[in-house]
Image 1 (tube, rainbow, N blue to C red):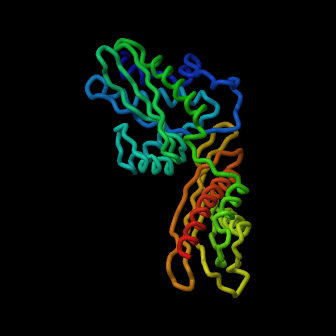
Image 2: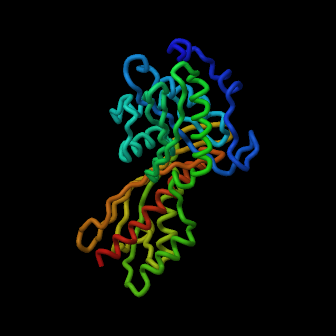
Image 3: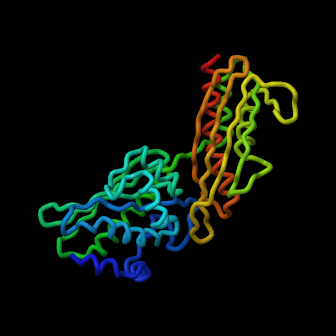
Length: 322
């Protein structure tokens, strides 16, 4: 096995030239597909002693190798270290769904890659775990090498497997939002025959550290609920009070950039109160990631995605209290 010093001295550019990743099936190399994913590679857990530094070396090598896939936007090492510090995982290789969601929120990653390296007889086995931050779906890939083999070649082969798995199964790793017409049709069926209360929505938005005049979360919630059949009362333009008052805040922030693509995080926090009783109908929050050509559009889409999910839960909570 190559020494830690030798591995640490490998130039990333040379890595990508010498060990290019295989392109996903059905795609031409260098062609950007319609779907991209933001990915963070965490340190791998490894046996102490001779392999003590292997976990961080695998993180470095796999991050460089995975970046060859044009559909993957890799999170920088500094952002990962910040997330690990806040979540207090250290270099353990163990990530549960709750900590995965937290790491994803801090880094803007939709997919986490981590795992463990260990000895099996005279071979070093590396098991990679691919975790969907939004869905908690987990896939595994395995690589192995003789003890005197090249960790660079082994990590390259494993990275190719991980890259292909993300490209093929990315739709199951990232939460999808149903088209608005499908959400509206489903909610209309749920409220059929019910007397619906009036609703007001006031959710201001800060997008990329700037206040906006057309808050995406508020627009999304109002649009869906109005189409479903709720009476919408504008709290800023009417003296009339709504039966259900929805308030909160929404904000988006820049995440990552790769070429022409930008990844942005959007979060919506919501509180709904029954004005007649003063009871809380729902307190909820949702964080999403969107990838687009501009940070402004990505931010809007991420917020709208979160608001759409919250609206479904809000309608269910209103119906449950009737």
